[in-house]
Image 1 (cartoon, rainbow, N blue to C red):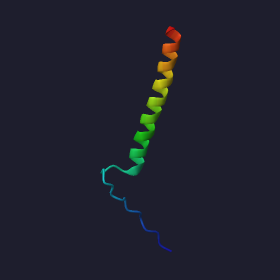
Image 2: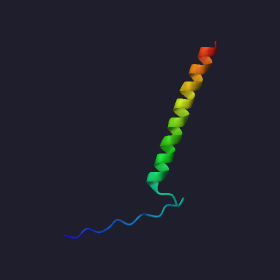
Image 3: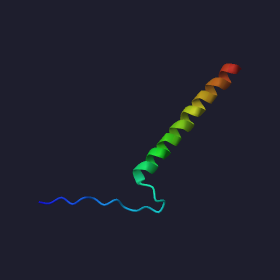
Image 4: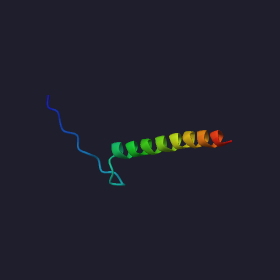
Length: 46
């Protein structure tokens, strides 16, 4: 039984799917925590 190496698939953006998914995840986390911190600061100032 031989195992073949998996070739990386070319994407239309030229970025691997794993890297793109990680950047999308990091961006969504920044937006989430930015919103939470902003809401805290606005409510604290009132």
